[in-house]
Image (cartoon, rainbow, N blue to C red; front, top):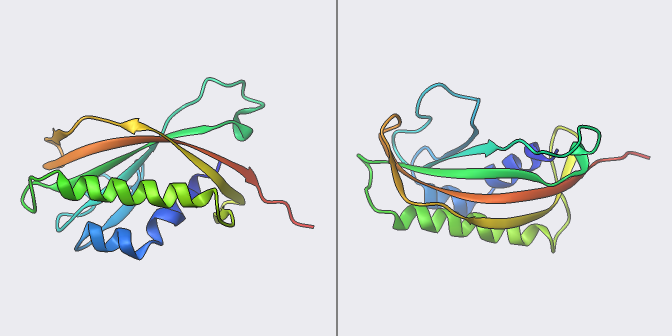
Length: 145
């Protein structure tokens, strides 16, 4: 389960922060109770359940969705959201050709596969426009000698 490495990869990229604008944040779905940024874009990472046997789930592909939000008071255009997703795609493609991204949880990210983009929508609860993109991550537990 390389969830922390995915979070670190997205939070650590300056170009992604620049695209996201003022107050840009990347948050796991469970870490907040209200909109985490009212001044610019934000990404919510939602990890999906797998239907693999419990004893192999840690080594199986981990499916996740990125929900990229923009407050409607900031913009109602989807172009900035699409640019953020494009940058996430670039970051994820780069994982395969670089050293693994290591998370603080003892797992490393070795590959991220693209599964598609969802439809453009309005999120009434957060008062944002939003678009999801789906991926799967492969990683392994870090072993120390």
